Image 1 (cartoon, rainbow, N blue to C red):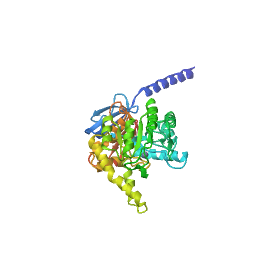
Image 2: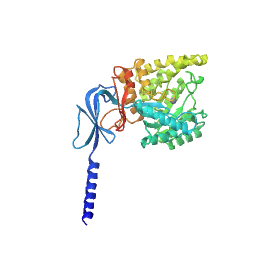
Image 3: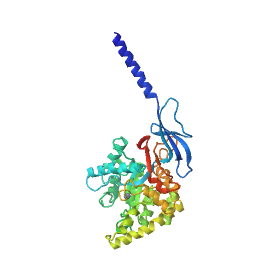
Image 4: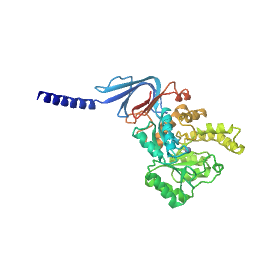
Length: 407
Ligand SMILES: [Zn+2]
Protein backbone atom coordinates (compact mmCIF):
# COMPACT_ATOMS: atom_id res chain seq x y z
CA UNK A 1 0.00 0.00 0.00
CA UNK A 2 2.75 2.38 1.04
CA UNK A 3 4.80 1.49 -1.98
CA UNK A 4 1.70 1.97 -4.12
CA UNK A 5 0.97 5.52 -2.82
CA UNK A 6 4.64 6.45 -3.10
CA UNK A 7 4.53 5.34 -6.72
CA UNK A 8 1.44 7.49 -7.28
CA UNK A 9 3.09 10.44 -5.59
CA UNK A 10 6.18 10.07 -7.71
CA UNK A 11 4.07 9.75 -10.84
CA UNK A 12 2.04 12.83 -9.91
CA UNK A 13 5.18 14.78 -9.07
CA UNK A 14 6.75 13.63 -12.31
CA UNK A 15 3.67 14.77 -14.20
CA UNK A 16 3.70 18.27 -12.69
CA UNK A 17 7.44 18.50 -13.12
CA UNK A 18 7.05 17.66 -16.81
CA UNK A 19 4.29 20.24 -17.18
CA UNK A 20 6.42 22.85 -15.43
CA UNK A 21 9.34 22.08 -17.75
CA UNK A 22 7.12 22.18 -20.78
CA UNK A 23 5.62 25.51 -19.82
CA UNK A 24 8.91 27.21 -19.04
CA UNK A 25 9.64 29.09 -22.26
CA UNK A 26 12.99 28.48 -23.93
CA UNK A 27 14.45 31.74 -25.12
CA UNK A 28 17.64 32.52 -26.99
CA UNK A 29 19.17 35.96 -26.67
CA UNK A 30 21.81 37.08 -29.14
CA UNK A 31 24.09 39.89 -28.05
CA UNK A 32 24.81 41.71 -31.30
CA UNK A 33 27.76 44.11 -31.21
CA UNK A 34 26.84 45.72 -34.52
CA UNK A 35 23.37 44.97 -35.82
CA UNK A 36 22.14 45.62 -39.34
CA UNK A 37 18.54 44.67 -38.54
CA UNK A 38 17.22 45.96 -41.87
CA UNK A 39 19.73 46.24 -44.71
CA UNK A 40 19.64 49.65 -46.36
CA UNK A 41 19.10 51.31 -42.97
CA UNK A 42 21.61 52.29 -40.29
CA UNK A 43 23.28 49.83 -37.93
CA UNK A 44 22.65 49.75 -34.17
CA UNK A 45 25.19 48.82 -31.51
CA UNK A 46 24.91 46.56 -28.47
CA UNK A 47 21.48 45.11 -29.16
CA UNK A 48 19.78 41.99 -27.81
CA UNK A 49 17.79 39.88 -30.26
CA UNK A 50 15.19 37.84 -28.39
CA UNK A 51 14.23 34.56 -30.07
CA UNK A 52 11.49 32.11 -29.20
CA UNK A 53 9.96 29.25 -31.23
CA UNK A 54 12.15 30.06 -34.23
CA UNK A 55 11.01 33.66 -34.45
CA UNK A 56 12.33 37.02 -33.36
CA UNK A 57 10.07 38.25 -30.57
CA UNK A 58 11.91 41.50 -29.94
CA UNK A 59 15.06 43.52 -30.53
CA UNK A 60 16.08 45.70 -27.59
CA UNK A 61 18.92 48.08 -26.80
CA UNK A 62 21.62 46.84 -24.36
CA UNK A 63 22.58 43.28 -23.47
CA UNK A 64 19.96 41.26 -21.61
CA UNK A 65 20.91 38.01 -19.86
CA UNK A 66 17.55 36.88 -18.56
CA UNK A 67 13.85 37.09 -19.32
CA UNK A 68 11.63 36.48 -16.27
CA UNK A 69 11.42 32.75 -15.49
CA UNK A 70 12.40 31.64 -18.97
CA UNK A 71 15.22 29.22 -19.63
CA UNK A 72 17.64 31.50 -21.46
CA UNK A 73 20.55 30.67 -23.75
CA UNK A 74 22.78 33.64 -24.46
CA UNK A 75 24.83 33.74 -27.67
CA UNK A 76 27.64 36.25 -27.48
CA UNK A 77 28.20 38.01 -30.81
CA UNK A 78 29.19 41.27 -29.12
CA UNK A 79 32.32 41.61 -31.28
CA UNK A 80 30.57 40.62 -34.53
CA UNK A 81 28.55 42.20 -37.33
CA UNK A 82 25.08 40.66 -37.22
CA UNK A 83 22.51 40.75 -40.04
CA UNK A 84 19.62 38.77 -41.54
CA UNK A 85 20.43 35.56 -43.40
CA UNK A 86 21.14 36.23 -47.07
CA UNK A 87 19.01 34.74 -49.85
CA UNK A 88 19.94 33.63 -53.36
CA UNK A 89 17.12 33.86 -55.89
CA UNK A 90 18.74 31.81 -58.64
CA UNK A 91 20.37 28.50 -57.78
CA UNK A 92 20.37 24.97 -59.17
CA UNK A 93 21.04 22.80 -56.12
CA UNK A 94 20.09 19.40 -57.47
CA UNK A 95 21.22 19.31 -61.09
CA UNK A 96 24.33 17.26 -61.43
CA UNK A 97 24.30 15.28 -64.63
CA UNK A 98 23.89 11.58 -63.88
CA UNK A 99 20.72 10.14 -62.37
CA UNK A 100 18.40 10.91 -59.44
CA UNK A 101 20.87 9.50 -56.90
CA UNK A 102 23.54 11.90 -58.18
CA UNK A 103 21.11 14.82 -58.04
CA UNK A 104 20.19 13.94 -54.47
CA UNK A 105 23.81 13.72 -53.33
CA UNK A 106 24.61 16.99 -55.09
CA UNK A 107 21.55 18.63 -53.54
CA UNK A 108 22.53 17.63 -50.02
CA UNK A 109 26.12 18.78 -50.48
CA UNK A 110 25.22 22.02 -52.28
CA UNK A 111 22.50 22.85 -49.77
CA UNK A 112 24.94 22.43 -46.90
CA UNK A 113 27.64 24.70 -48.32
CA UNK A 114 25.04 27.30 -49.29
CA UNK A 115 23.71 27.51 -45.73
CA UNK A 116 27.25 27.65 -44.30
CA UNK A 117 27.97 30.59 -46.64
CA UNK A 118 25.27 32.54 -44.80
CA UNK A 119 22.44 31.94 -47.28
CA UNK A 120 19.43 30.77 -45.28
CA UNK A 121 16.91 30.81 -48.14
CA UNK A 122 17.17 30.06 -51.86
CA UNK A 123 14.93 29.99 -54.87
CA UNK A 124 15.85 26.97 -56.99
CA UNK A 125 15.18 27.78 -60.63
CA UNK A 126 15.57 24.47 -62.32
CA UNK A 127 16.42 20.93 -61.35
CA UNK A 128 16.72 17.89 -63.57
CA UNK A 129 13.84 16.02 -61.90
CA UNK A 130 11.64 16.10 -58.78
CA UNK A 131 14.61 15.44 -56.46
CA UNK A 132 14.50 19.12 -55.55
CA UNK A 133 11.00 18.76 -54.06
CA UNK A 134 12.23 15.85 -51.93
CA UNK A 135 15.25 17.85 -50.84
CA UNK A 136 12.97 20.77 -49.91
CA UNK A 137 10.89 18.43 -47.74
CA UNK A 138 13.92 16.75 -46.13
CA UNK A 139 15.29 20.18 -45.15
CA UNK A 140 11.90 21.35 -43.86
CA UNK A 141 11.59 18.14 -41.81
CA UNK A 142 15.07 18.68 -40.34
CA UNK A 143 16.49 15.48 -41.86
CA UNK A 144 18.99 17.33 -44.05
CA UNK A 145 20.88 20.55 -43.30
CA UNK A 146 20.35 23.24 -45.90
CA UNK A 147 18.64 26.52 -46.73
CA UNK A 148 14.88 27.00 -46.94
CA UNK A 149 14.00 26.22 -50.56
CA UNK A 150 11.43 27.73 -52.89
CA UNK A 151 11.51 25.55 -55.96
CA UNK A 152 10.49 25.92 -59.59
CA UNK A 153 10.85 22.19 -60.21
CA UNK A 154 12.08 21.68 -63.77
CA UNK A 155 12.46 24.47 -66.31
CA UNK A 156 9.73 24.76 -68.94
CA UNK A 157 11.15 25.25 -72.43
CA UNK A 158 10.62 24.45 -76.07
CA UNK A 159 11.75 21.04 -77.28
CA UNK A 160 13.00 19.65 -73.96
CA UNK A 161 16.58 20.79 -74.28
CA UNK A 162 18.29 18.54 -71.80
CA UNK A 163 17.26 20.01 -68.49
CA UNK A 164 13.82 21.30 -69.44
CA UNK A 165 10.32 19.91 -69.84
CA UNK A 166 8.50 20.57 -73.04
CA UNK A 167 6.09 23.34 -73.90
CA UNK A 168 5.22 23.19 -77.58
CA UNK A 169 1.78 24.41 -78.58
CA UNK A 170 -0.94 25.74 -76.31
CA UNK A 171 -2.23 22.41 -74.96
CA UNK A 172 1.27 21.15 -74.28
CA UNK A 173 2.26 24.35 -72.45
CA UNK A 174 -0.88 24.33 -70.36
CA UNK A 175 -0.47 20.69 -69.38
CA UNK A 176 3.24 21.02 -68.61
CA UNK A 177 2.72 24.10 -66.44
CA UNK A 178 -0.18 22.56 -64.56
CA UNK A 179 1.72 19.30 -63.99
CA UNK A 180 4.66 21.24 -62.60
CA UNK A 181 2.46 23.14 -60.16
CA UNK A 182 0.56 20.05 -59.07
CA UNK A 183 3.92 18.30 -58.67
CA UNK A 184 4.90 20.90 -56.05
CA UNK A 185 6.44 23.92 -57.78
CA UNK A 186 6.43 27.18 -55.79
CA UNK A 187 7.48 29.05 -58.95
CA UNK A 188 7.35 28.46 -62.68
CA UNK A 189 10.62 28.97 -64.53
CA UNK A 190 10.59 29.40 -68.30
CA UNK A 191 13.29 29.46 -70.92
CA UNK A 192 12.00 32.42 -72.92
CA UNK A 193 15.24 32.49 -74.92
CA UNK A 194 18.26 30.30 -75.66
CA UNK A 195 20.76 29.58 -72.92
CA UNK A 196 23.60 32.08 -72.57
CA UNK A 197 26.16 29.77 -74.11
CA UNK A 198 24.20 29.34 -77.34
CA UNK A 199 24.72 31.69 -80.29
CA UNK A 200 20.96 32.44 -80.46
CA UNK A 201 21.16 34.23 -77.08
CA UNK A 202 22.52 37.39 -78.76
CA UNK A 203 20.86 40.80 -78.57
CA UNK A 204 18.61 40.30 -81.59
CA UNK A 205 17.82 36.65 -80.88
CA UNK A 206 14.25 35.41 -81.13
CA UNK A 207 12.01 34.61 -78.16
CA UNK A 208 11.38 30.87 -77.73
CA UNK A 209 7.61 30.96 -77.24
CA UNK A 210 4.75 32.09 -79.40
CA UNK A 211 2.43 34.55 -77.70
CA UNK A 212 -0.31 31.96 -77.28
CA UNK A 213 2.17 29.64 -75.55
CA UNK A 214 3.25 32.41 -73.18
CA UNK A 215 -0.41 33.10 -72.52
CA UNK A 216 -1.09 29.43 -71.74
CA UNK A 217 1.78 29.23 -69.27
CA UNK A 218 1.02 32.47 -67.47
CA UNK A 219 -2.74 31.82 -67.36
CA UNK A 220 -2.20 28.49 -65.61
CA UNK A 221 0.32 30.03 -63.22
CA UNK A 222 -2.08 32.86 -62.43
CA UNK A 223 -4.93 30.44 -61.85
CA UNK A 224 -2.88 28.68 -59.16
CA UNK A 225 -1.39 31.94 -57.86
CA UNK A 226 2.16 30.84 -58.74
CA UNK A 227 4.67 33.48 -59.89
CA UNK A 228 6.72 33.10 -63.07
CA UNK A 229 10.48 33.67 -63.48
CA UNK A 230 11.75 34.12 -67.03
CA UNK A 231 15.22 33.33 -68.28
CA UNK A 232 15.92 35.97 -70.93
CA UNK A 233 18.94 37.19 -72.91
CA UNK A 234 17.74 38.87 -76.16
CA UNK A 235 15.91 42.19 -76.10
CA UNK A 236 12.76 40.76 -77.70
CA UNK A 237 12.25 37.99 -75.14
CA UNK A 238 12.49 40.59 -72.34
CA UNK A 239 9.76 42.64 -74.01
CA UNK A 240 7.60 39.58 -74.55
CA UNK A 241 7.72 38.18 -71.01
CA UNK A 242 6.96 41.61 -69.53
CA UNK A 243 3.75 41.64 -71.57
CA UNK A 244 2.68 38.47 -69.74
CA UNK A 245 3.30 39.63 -66.19
CA UNK A 246 6.35 37.65 -65.08
CA UNK A 247 7.66 38.43 -61.58
CA UNK A 248 11.38 38.29 -62.35
CA UNK A 249 13.72 38.34 -65.33
CA UNK A 250 16.83 36.20 -65.01
CA UNK A 251 20.14 37.31 -66.61
CA UNK A 252 18.46 40.10 -68.61
CA UNK A 253 21.58 40.52 -70.70
CA UNK A 254 20.03 42.70 -73.40
CA UNK A 255 17.06 44.32 -71.66
CA UNK A 256 16.46 47.69 -73.31
CA UNK A 257 15.65 50.96 -71.58
CA UNK A 258 11.90 50.63 -72.20
CA UNK A 259 11.88 47.16 -70.58
CA UNK A 260 13.79 48.48 -67.58
CA UNK A 261 11.31 51.34 -67.22
CA UNK A 262 8.48 48.85 -67.34
CA UNK A 263 10.14 46.64 -64.74
CA UNK A 264 10.41 49.61 -62.43
CA UNK A 265 6.77 50.55 -63.00
CA UNK A 266 5.41 46.98 -62.68
CA UNK A 267 7.81 46.03 -59.85
CA UNK A 268 9.41 43.19 -61.82
CA UNK A 269 12.72 42.05 -60.38
CA UNK A 270 15.98 41.93 -62.30
CA UNK A 271 18.18 38.98 -61.28
CA UNK A 272 21.61 39.74 -62.76
CA UNK A 273 23.38 36.37 -62.09
CA UNK A 274 26.57 38.40 -62.24
CA UNK A 275 28.57 35.61 -60.56
CA UNK A 276 28.59 33.72 -63.86
CA UNK A 277 31.01 36.38 -65.17
CA UNK A 278 33.81 34.89 -63.04
CA UNK A 279 33.46 31.73 -65.07
CA UNK A 280 33.23 33.54 -68.42
CA UNK A 281 36.35 35.46 -67.49
CA UNK A 282 38.25 32.21 -66.96
CA UNK A 283 36.93 30.72 -70.21
CA UNK A 284 37.80 33.81 -72.27
CA UNK A 285 41.35 33.61 -70.99
CA UNK A 286 41.61 29.87 -71.62
CA UNK A 287 43.53 29.23 -74.89
CA UNK A 288 41.44 26.07 -75.41
CA UNK A 289 38.24 28.14 -75.86
CA UNK A 290 36.99 28.45 -79.43
CA UNK A 291 37.82 32.03 -80.59
CA UNK A 292 34.28 32.80 -81.85
CA UNK A 293 32.83 31.69 -78.51
CA UNK A 294 35.47 33.65 -76.59
CA UNK A 295 34.54 36.78 -78.55
CA UNK A 296 30.85 36.30 -77.74
CA UNK A 297 31.63 35.82 -74.06
CA UNK A 298 33.86 38.90 -74.02
CA UNK A 299 30.88 40.87 -75.35
CA UNK A 300 28.81 39.65 -72.40
CA UNK A 301 31.62 40.48 -69.98
CA UNK A 302 31.77 44.04 -71.30
CA UNK A 303 28.01 44.47 -71.39
CA UNK A 304 26.89 43.08 -68.01
CA UNK A 305 28.37 45.67 -65.63
CA UNK A 306 26.82 48.45 -67.76
CA UNK A 307 23.41 46.74 -67.71
CA UNK A 308 23.43 46.20 -63.96
CA UNK A 309 24.54 49.76 -63.18
CA UNK A 310 21.95 51.14 -65.56
CA UNK A 311 19.17 49.16 -63.85
CA UNK A 312 20.48 50.24 -60.43
CA UNK A 313 20.59 53.90 -61.39
CA UNK A 314 17.12 53.74 -62.94
CA UNK A 315 15.68 52.21 -59.77
CA UNK A 316 14.74 48.83 -61.25
CA UNK A 317 14.19 46.34 -58.38
CA UNK A 318 17.25 44.07 -58.18
CA UNK A 319 17.60 40.89 -56.11
CA UNK A 320 20.65 38.69 -55.61
CA UNK A 321 20.75 35.60 -57.79
CA UNK A 322 23.98 33.84 -58.66
CA UNK A 323 23.05 30.97 -60.96
CA UNK A 324 24.97 28.69 -58.57
CA UNK A 325 25.30 25.46 -60.44
CA UNK A 326 26.83 27.43 -63.29
CA UNK A 327 28.63 29.60 -60.68
CA UNK A 328 30.04 27.71 -57.66
CA UNK A 329 27.80 26.69 -54.76
CA UNK A 330 28.85 28.02 -51.35
CA UNK A 331 30.38 31.19 -52.77
CA UNK A 332 27.02 32.90 -53.31
CA UNK A 333 28.42 36.02 -51.58
CA UNK A 334 30.44 36.70 -54.76
CA UNK A 335 27.30 38.18 -56.29
CA UNK A 336 27.08 40.79 -53.52
CA UNK A 337 30.80 41.55 -53.80
CA UNK A 338 30.62 41.96 -57.54
CA UNK A 339 27.78 44.50 -57.25
CA UNK A 340 30.00 46.61 -55.00
CA UNK A 341 32.97 46.19 -57.36
CA UNK A 342 31.02 48.01 -60.10
CA UNK A 343 29.81 50.84 -57.89
CA UNK A 344 26.67 49.73 -56.04
CA UNK A 345 26.69 50.94 -52.42
CA UNK A 346 27.55 48.25 -49.84
CA UNK A 347 24.31 48.68 -47.91
CA UNK A 348 22.25 48.55 -51.12
CA UNK A 349 24.02 45.34 -52.16
CA UNK A 350 23.21 43.78 -48.76
CA UNK A 351 19.61 44.93 -49.17
CA UNK A 352 19.46 43.15 -52.54
CA UNK A 353 20.47 39.95 -50.70
CA UNK A 354 17.89 40.28 -47.91
CA UNK A 355 15.05 42.82 -48.01
CA UNK A 356 14.62 42.66 -51.80
CA UNK A 357 14.83 38.88 -52.03
CA UNK A 358 12.12 38.56 -49.38
CA UNK A 359 9.98 41.00 -51.35
CA UNK A 360 10.46 39.02 -54.58
CA UNK A 361 9.36 35.85 -52.78
CA UNK A 362 6.32 37.68 -51.39
CA UNK A 363 7.55 36.77 -47.88
CA UNK A 364 8.48 40.14 -46.44
CA UNK A 365 6.24 39.41 -43.45
CA UNK A 366 8.53 36.49 -42.44
CA UNK A 367 11.92 36.97 -44.11
CA UNK A 368 14.56 39.53 -45.03
CA UNK A 369 15.26 41.41 -41.80
CA UNK A 370 15.68 40.96 -38.06
CA UNK A 371 12.39 42.29 -36.77
CA UNK A 372 9.65 41.26 -34.39
CA UNK A 373 7.55 38.37 -35.73
CA UNK A 374 9.93 37.26 -38.48
CA UNK A 375 11.87 33.99 -38.69
CA UNK A 376 15.11 34.08 -36.76
CA UNK A 377 17.33 33.71 -39.83
CA UNK A 378 20.46 35.41 -38.57
CA UNK A 379 24.12 35.42 -39.59
CA UNK A 380 27.25 37.03 -38.19
CA UNK A 381 30.61 37.93 -39.70
CA UNK A 382 33.88 39.33 -38.44
CA UNK A 383 34.77 42.80 -39.70
CA UNK A 384 32.19 45.10 -41.26
CA UNK A 385 30.85 44.47 -44.78
CA UNK A 386 29.46 48.02 -44.89
CA UNK A 387 33.09 49.16 -44.95
CA UNK A 388 34.78 46.20 -46.67
CA UNK A 389 32.32 44.11 -48.65
CA UNK A 390 34.57 41.02 -48.75
CA UNK A 391 34.04 40.70 -44.98
CA UNK A 392 30.75 39.08 -46.00
CA UNK A 393 32.84 35.94 -46.61
CA UNK A 394 33.82 35.71 -42.92
CA UNK A 395 30.70 33.87 -41.82
CA UNK A 396 31.15 32.73 -38.21
CA UNK A 397 27.53 32.20 -37.22
CA UNK A 398 24.44 30.90 -39.01
CA UNK A 399 20.98 30.53 -37.47
CA UNK A 400 17.91 29.44 -39.42
CA UNK A 401 14.50 29.61 -37.81
CA UNK A 402 16.07 29.86 -34.38
CA UNK A 403 18.34 26.85 -34.77
CA UNK A 404 22.11 27.33 -34.80
CA UNK A 405 23.90 25.62 -37.70
CA UNK A 406 27.27 27.32 -37.46
CA UNK A 407 28.84 28.91 -34.41
ZN1 LIG B 1 20.11 29.29 -64.07
